[in-house]
Image 1 (cartoon, rainbow, N blue to C red):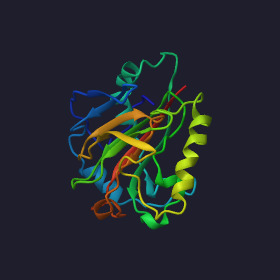
Image 2 (image 1 turned 60 degrees about the vertical axis):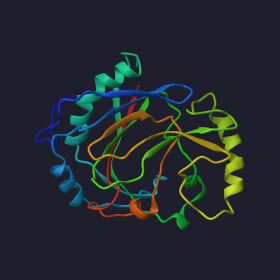
Image 3 (image 1 turned 45 degrees about the vertical axis):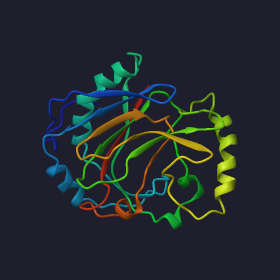
Length: 239
């Protein structure tokens, strides 16, 4: 996806990315602040969009499609950075998987067991999430977790079966507990890093990392594009 789209709904600032290395595995995470020159058009597109719950997803909220000009512009700006930071083999090509606006709207009491623990998007090592924070008010950060009994921070094809076998202890314990979002360390998972929600911040990380939104029920559970925890999400595969 390197062709130009017109008109674009964002214009990107000249940026200097910050690359931090998180956890025991020192996995790179890319942070770009003040990514777009102006968010007003993108926010207006969100306000005019129809948000719905996706039956095929465990996402605890509602989503709406992003206009294709947005992921095209974002990917054109950051694809080389992703290749370089994550040492992606040059013969692998970008294959965008999905691009959506997202709003958390699900009350804690309605969460299914798998929605109450840190998750990973895919065990594929060359799958990435691009997360763009869009609203101004303070909202919950994106947290990264380590599974304590295995030490796993990233889930891959080699450790996925062992991880799920080990994670069953958490699920068994929490099936009878009062449902809640997972926002801090406990006896099963350690919260070792978090990226604060900041308007116009772009975050890029491997989808294999165990992560979760650190949901603040007072501010984050809100299906309004004007007052909710609005994000733009792009999921990329290199294959």
